[in-house]
Image (cartoon, rainbow, N blue to C red; front, side, top):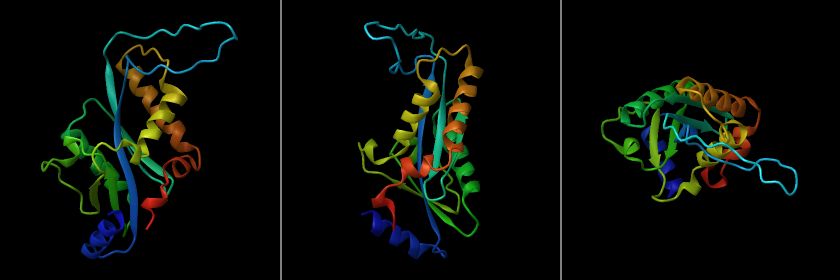
Length: 187
Protein backbone atom coordinates (compact mmCIF):
# COMPACT_ATOMS: atom_id res chain seq x y z
CA UNK A 1 0.00 0.00 0.00
CA UNK A 2 2.73 2.49 0.94
CA UNK A 3 4.67 2.28 -2.37
CA UNK A 4 1.44 2.68 -4.37
CA UNK A 5 0.47 5.76 -2.35
CA UNK A 6 3.92 7.29 -2.87
CA UNK A 7 3.64 6.65 -6.61
CA UNK A 8 0.17 8.23 -6.71
CA UNK A 9 1.47 11.35 -4.93
CA UNK A 10 4.54 11.56 -7.23
CA UNK A 11 2.23 11.62 -10.25
CA UNK A 12 0.31 14.58 -8.80
CA UNK A 13 3.31 16.79 -8.00
CA UNK A 14 6.04 18.23 -10.21
CA UNK A 15 9.06 17.26 -8.13
CA UNK A 16 10.71 13.92 -7.56
CA UNK A 17 12.31 15.00 -4.30
CA UNK A 18 10.12 13.68 -1.50
CA UNK A 19 10.78 13.78 2.23
CA UNK A 20 9.09 11.34 4.61
CA UNK A 21 8.10 12.86 7.95
CA UNK A 22 6.51 11.21 11.01
CA UNK A 23 4.18 13.23 13.22
CA UNK A 24 2.46 12.73 16.57
CA UNK A 25 1.68 14.55 19.79
CA UNK A 26 2.09 13.67 23.44
CA UNK A 27 0.65 15.04 26.67
CA UNK A 28 3.21 15.99 29.31
CA UNK A 29 2.19 17.13 32.76
CA UNK A 30 2.10 16.86 36.48
CA UNK A 31 0.60 13.39 36.47
CA UNK A 32 3.42 12.15 34.29
CA UNK A 33 5.24 8.87 33.89
CA UNK A 34 7.12 6.93 36.47
CA UNK A 35 10.15 4.98 35.40
CA UNK A 36 12.88 2.92 36.95
CA UNK A 37 15.47 4.52 39.18
CA UNK A 38 18.85 3.30 40.38
CA UNK A 39 18.88 2.17 43.98
CA UNK A 40 21.01 0.16 46.35
CA UNK A 41 20.25 -3.55 46.18
CA UNK A 42 17.60 -4.58 48.69
CA UNK A 43 16.05 -1.10 48.97
CA UNK A 44 12.79 0.21 47.56
CA UNK A 45 13.24 3.83 46.48
CA UNK A 46 10.27 6.15 46.69
CA UNK A 47 9.35 8.51 43.89
CA UNK A 48 6.89 11.31 44.48
CA UNK A 49 3.99 11.38 42.02
CA UNK A 50 2.07 14.60 41.64
CA UNK A 51 -1.70 14.75 41.88
CA UNK A 52 -2.20 18.14 40.19
CA UNK A 53 -3.56 18.35 36.64
CA UNK A 54 -1.47 20.95 34.79
CA UNK A 55 -0.29 19.67 31.42
CA UNK A 56 0.65 20.66 27.91
CA UNK A 57 1.18 18.92 24.57
CA UNK A 58 4.26 18.44 22.44
CA UNK A 59 3.39 18.38 18.75
CA UNK A 60 6.44 16.81 17.13
CA UNK A 61 7.55 15.72 13.67
CA UNK A 62 10.78 14.16 12.44
CA UNK A 63 12.41 13.50 9.08
CA UNK A 64 14.84 10.58 9.55
CA UNK A 65 16.55 11.04 6.16
CA UNK A 66 17.60 14.57 7.09
CA UNK A 67 18.02 13.74 10.80
CA UNK A 68 15.94 16.76 11.82
CA UNK A 69 12.85 17.37 13.85
CA UNK A 70 10.53 20.23 14.65
CA UNK A 71 8.18 20.58 17.57
CA UNK A 72 5.84 22.99 19.25
CA UNK A 73 4.66 23.03 22.83
CA UNK A 74 0.97 23.89 22.68
CA UNK A 75 -1.68 24.23 25.40
CA UNK A 76 -4.37 22.13 23.70
CA UNK A 77 -4.67 19.23 21.32
CA UNK A 78 -7.15 20.10 18.57
CA UNK A 79 -7.37 20.98 14.88
CA UNK A 80 -6.35 24.61 15.46
CA UNK A 81 -3.11 23.52 17.12
CA UNK A 82 -2.58 20.91 14.40
CA UNK A 83 -2.86 23.65 11.76
CA UNK A 84 -0.14 25.66 13.51
CA UNK A 85 2.08 22.59 13.60
CA UNK A 86 1.52 21.74 9.91
CA UNK A 87 2.47 25.31 8.99
CA UNK A 88 5.67 24.92 11.02
CA UNK A 89 6.54 21.61 9.32
CA UNK A 90 5.89 23.19 5.93
CA UNK A 91 8.56 25.81 6.65
CA UNK A 92 11.10 23.08 7.53
CA UNK A 93 10.77 21.27 4.21
CA UNK A 94 13.66 21.90 1.85
CA UNK A 95 13.06 24.12 -1.15
CA UNK A 96 11.86 22.18 -4.23
CA UNK A 97 10.95 19.21 -2.02
CA UNK A 98 7.59 17.76 -1.11
CA UNK A 99 6.76 16.09 2.22
CA UNK A 100 4.59 13.13 3.02
CA UNK A 101 3.66 13.19 6.68
CA UNK A 102 2.66 9.87 8.20
CA UNK A 103 0.45 10.13 11.28
CA UNK A 104 -2.26 8.35 13.18
CA UNK A 105 -5.96 8.90 12.52
CA UNK A 106 -6.76 11.27 15.37
CA UNK A 107 -9.79 13.41 14.57
CA UNK A 108 -7.71 16.63 14.47
CA UNK A 109 -5.44 15.00 11.82
CA UNK A 110 -8.24 13.97 9.48
CA UNK A 111 -10.62 16.90 9.75
CA UNK A 112 -11.63 18.82 6.64
CA UNK A 113 -11.04 22.04 8.60
CA UNK A 114 -7.26 21.75 8.09
CA UNK A 115 -5.71 23.89 5.39
CA UNK A 116 -2.92 21.57 4.21
CA UNK A 117 0.14 23.51 2.94
CA UNK A 118 0.92 23.05 -0.77
CA UNK A 119 4.22 21.23 -0.11
CA UNK A 120 2.66 18.55 2.12
CA UNK A 121 0.47 15.46 1.84
CA UNK A 122 -0.92 13.72 4.89
CA UNK A 123 -0.90 9.94 4.91
CA UNK A 124 -2.77 8.24 7.75
CA UNK A 125 -1.36 5.05 9.18
CA UNK A 126 -3.65 2.03 9.54
CA UNK A 127 -6.04 2.27 12.51
CA UNK A 128 -4.93 0.94 15.89
CA UNK A 129 -1.28 0.62 14.88
CA UNK A 130 0.83 2.93 17.06
CA UNK A 131 3.76 0.54 16.61
CA UNK A 132 4.11 1.79 13.00
CA UNK A 133 4.79 5.36 14.08
CA UNK A 134 8.35 5.85 15.38
CA UNK A 135 7.25 9.05 17.13
CA UNK A 136 5.97 6.77 19.88
CA UNK A 137 9.60 5.78 20.53
CA UNK A 138 10.63 9.44 20.46
CA UNK A 139 8.15 10.12 23.28
CA UNK A 140 9.60 7.19 25.23
CA UNK A 141 13.10 8.63 24.79
CA UNK A 142 12.02 12.10 25.93
CA UNK A 143 10.44 10.64 29.03
CA UNK A 144 13.54 8.55 29.66
CA UNK A 145 15.90 11.52 29.17
CA UNK A 146 14.13 14.30 31.07
CA UNK A 147 10.40 13.97 31.66
CA UNK A 148 9.70 11.00 33.94
CA UNK A 149 9.92 11.06 37.74
CA UNK A 150 9.70 14.85 37.57
CA UNK A 151 7.72 17.18 39.82
CA UNK A 152 6.72 20.25 37.87
CA UNK A 153 6.31 23.48 39.84
CA UNK A 154 4.00 25.19 37.36
CA UNK A 155 2.99 25.35 33.72
CA UNK A 156 6.16 27.22 32.69
CA UNK A 157 8.30 24.52 34.27
CA UNK A 158 6.45 21.88 32.20
CA UNK A 159 7.01 23.88 28.99
CA UNK A 160 10.70 24.49 29.78
CA UNK A 161 11.24 20.79 30.54
CA UNK A 162 9.55 19.76 27.28
CA UNK A 163 11.73 22.17 25.29
CA UNK A 164 14.87 20.96 27.03
CA UNK A 165 14.00 17.28 26.44
CA UNK A 166 13.16 17.83 22.74
CA UNK A 167 16.28 19.89 22.10
CA UNK A 168 18.49 17.43 23.97
CA UNK A 169 17.14 14.57 21.84
CA UNK A 170 17.32 16.40 18.49
CA UNK A 171 20.71 18.03 19.03
CA UNK A 172 22.53 14.70 19.20
CA UNK A 173 23.59 13.71 15.67
CA UNK A 174 22.01 10.52 14.42
CA UNK A 175 19.35 10.22 17.15
CA UNK A 176 16.41 10.81 14.82
CA UNK A 177 17.84 8.77 11.97
CA UNK A 178 18.69 5.81 14.20
CA UNK A 179 15.40 5.73 16.08
CA UNK A 180 12.93 6.70 13.35
CA UNK A 181 14.17 5.18 10.09
CA UNK A 182 11.96 2.37 8.78
CA UNK A 183 12.97 0.11 5.90
CA UNK A 184 9.40 -0.16 4.66
CA UNK A 185 9.13 3.65 4.45
CA UNK A 186 12.09 3.96 2.03
CA UNK A 187 11.18 4.25 -1.62
